[in-house]
Length: 123
Image (cartoon, rainbow, N blue to C red):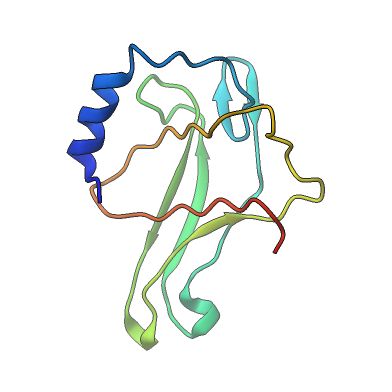
């Protein structure tokens, strides 16, 4: 597994040699363009737990003073719980990303381990 510092070193080493082209903004903010999904919490309450989370848009929350999304919450192992998460609903019409070679994420963490799942089909 690649940890945070290893990932930082990797990005620093290749960022000037990787030619990125403009892509399709799925979620986030860039200039006057914004891509927005409806995010909702899915926490351990579905199995009796008491953890809570939320996803909020902060208009000036980024390091550059621009809009950003913030996932926050409290994890509790009470009642056999222990997870918080957010997700989007399945798209009525899937995003066609066949013209692209990858997905770029810009995230800032708090040192904890997180998991990202990207589905490529409804199954």
